[in-house]
Image (tube, protein in one colour):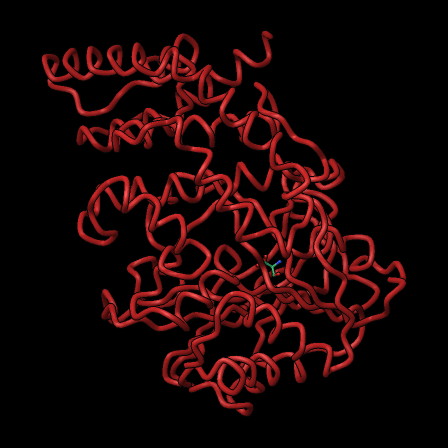
Length: 436
Ligand code: SER
């Protein structure tokens, strides 16, 4: 495999597509414009909605870029070695131009010839069909013809293999997976399994439909391809033996700072590693959101509330590792430095980014210690009662009185070997928001 660093991988991606007639459209704001029902840009295709629906793009029918994305729906998975709330997606699009033939061949060539990932390490999926779209036998035949191993081509159902957001252009996936050294968990293990044998590294969506309502789809005027490949994950498989994104050059400086402060090396204690990854990811995402052209600030609603949660969770983990919170500025500077070439506005906004994060940290620090004491009381009470799940009401009290976002309590609970009832919390939180 080619040991490309982050800068080289970005360049290779764009070069591959420019050689095939694509125009680089660059990246846009991370914060959603409110038209798609999602708070952040969760995929590279989001800003291209009108063009995927048929409007003519000024730069033509073949486009590419590397776009920053923020996804917080799986925030509790951040802490492992492959998840991040801010990540970059390497994208390319055919707007009513080429379709499955070119797409499958180029994907195979990109993986095996440009990135030099061995054929044996690649698995791919095709849609198995339902009442809205037929089984994608065509893609499977093409994939085998261009070089994918027949036994590594899987057919999966809509729940696993279909791309859509709230509304808009959508369609069946053609996903790609890196096959790791972790053995299959069973003979039926397939790419939808999260045992670690398969890690998703990319997706080409054959976008032929528009979602107009719940379970209601209409055909699009022209067939598009929406390609989005995971920048950090591919970088990790090219450069490490275990695919840990936090071992790539994107996080190397941050790991070094935390190792120095902690006096121990990364990858020697899983509990500490988890906190280290959460700190690095959440600082990076907060930096990106505060430096964004939309000028997001922490608040109690919408995107601003997500930003507040990220900063608070990061502060709790810094405190857990007994890292002096006043040294946070060093980590923020480093993030700005690592990303400023791609996102020059970070540098211009650096003072604001630091002052907002530090102000937010100061506010949360005031209640954090008291909240942790309250949490310990809850744990003692539960132990006496022989319970193992923290109730939604307790989660809500910690949120309302001490400003603990649910994932902060969830982390504390996990460390204490307990579970939490998030369903009841979500209900109470919704009622609270409606009232206020
Ligand atoms: N929209 C698809 C995804 O995010 C492919 O770009 O996976």
